[in-house]
Amino acid sequence: LAKTTQPISMDSYEGQEVNITCSHNNIATNDYITWYQQFPSQGPRFIIQGYKTKVTNEVASLFIPADRKSSTLSLPRVSLSDTAVYYCLVVLSGSARQLTFGSGTQLTVLP
Amino acid sequence: NAGVTQTPKFQVLKTGQSMTLQCAQDMNHNSMYWYRQDPGMGLRLIYYSASEGTTDKGEVPNGYNVSRLNKREFSLRLESAAPSQTSVYFCASSEQFRPGGEQYFGPGTRLTVT
Image 1 (cartoon, each protein chain N blue to C red):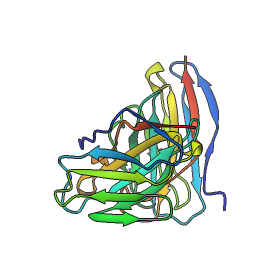
Image 2 (cartoon, each protein chain N blue to C red; image 1 turned 60 degrees about the horizontal axis):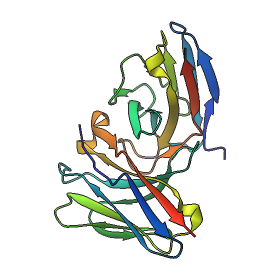
Image 3 (tube, rainbow over the protein chains, first blue to last red; image 1 turned 180 degrees about the horizontal axis):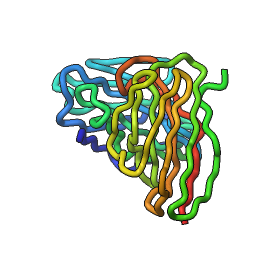
Image 4 (tube, rainbow over the protein chains, first blue to last red; image 1 turned 90 degrees about the vertical axis):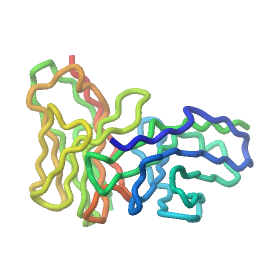
């Protein structure tokens, strides 16, 4: 089964940039990395997806180094409403049995 | 658009009882998923369906059956509920024919088995 590793928790202050890293050592060449945000009592919400190098959208950036053994979600200028659990997802070789969400990183944004 | 809807929102079962969780999506997506999330844990895939009539096992399929009768609906059945199946169940859908990618999640069903 695909294995992903994330920090359990992180604290930040409003207005700061936050970087959350996910390790996925056995990712294959064609596998995408996807990040989700989850608030309490809600289903996860898609943030961003990438394959290599850098992807940016209106809410986040995703950095993937050349070896693709890790990826970093970057949230610019966080606010209190960004307090949530963040998950990375990889699917090895396109197999449902290899679809793994990480254990999640609890981000707490402080005023 | 309602997105992904799930029924019921809450359910309490006794050990050995059966029930079916319903999920529907109105986004014309091809793939649908059933996950469970235990307290303080990440999501684990139970079953996946790439299209009508096809299903694949995920990480934790034991004790569950699924049915993808049409493109919109994907149901999850517990034939004989056990306390270990107490969890929050999420249904999701995505556009592509392979698992993963940008998934849209429903609000969840909170199931307690006593």
